[in-house]
Image (tube, rainbow, N blue to C red; front, top):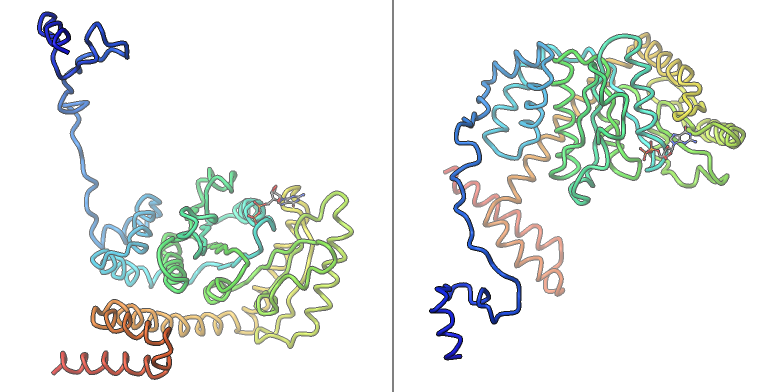
Length: 380
Ligand code: GDP
């Protein structure tokens, strides 16, 4: 030890790095070099200029996709100050909306939604106009990264200058995610997108949300083992305006035709929907681009039908009503659950209910009464 110390002093070795001692058999450590204060001192960091409400509206109206994208980000933001601006932008965009065909597309994972949307989208764009593809995927927050709306899944549309693809908003409840998508439709329409696709994964509640914001609801199905009908919920079939059996190619064609017949038979058992339109069923292949015309002829016929009988307008009016109530419900809930006193009381009541000390109804009534009393006190 003593010898070592001498050695260090003799060599001028700093005690900070004893491993540099000749007797040390490990790796050598070199003295570090001073880091420059920044990589490029001449680089001027420019902050993105803050847009005013009018800047947003003007940019959107001019079809500037960068501004549109920023406005959508604002709509999706959870920050209250962003929400204030977003709502003003939406309000100012409203007079320029309503002129698009809104089409909802659903199907279980693997049904071929992305492949089909890519092909359907190009088909629509070849007829002129612009297309926005939005998505509702409430699971995306859990899976950390949206499974829907990912640009790489729609290769042709992703590079098309007239297509705007936006993944699902990821934060919040289904109601919240759906409302943001509904508001994004407003912005896209004001930006001149006259075709809107709203995609959702066909596994549950999100179809109802999509159905409440589109004019036509397309259900993509697969021919499978002969029991196709058992796999999907009756409710989803009832909402569909058209059912299309994908992957009708190669030796799958016959099975696809059989599935189509089964769906047609099943649909006949349903009462005629308020649109007066009996949902149609057809087969196609997204991958091999077979019968894409057929699918789109069906959708065109539907639009002709509902424009002629007035149902188009009626459905949109009903949807406006639905969104009014949805927005109220959501905001009431958000306000209630974010109240610190409610949160404190809920923690206590929850344990009481779990321990059978109080019934759920009494506990709920107590929390609500407490909340209303506090509200009244604050208003006095
Ligand atoms: P999504 O999960 O519903 O978006 O489905 P995808 O579009 O990702 O398709 C799932 C798989 O089915 C992929 O491997 C596609 O290549 C394949 N696929 C999609 N459409 C067709 C089709 O028309 N025919 C065949 N044979 N395969 C298809």
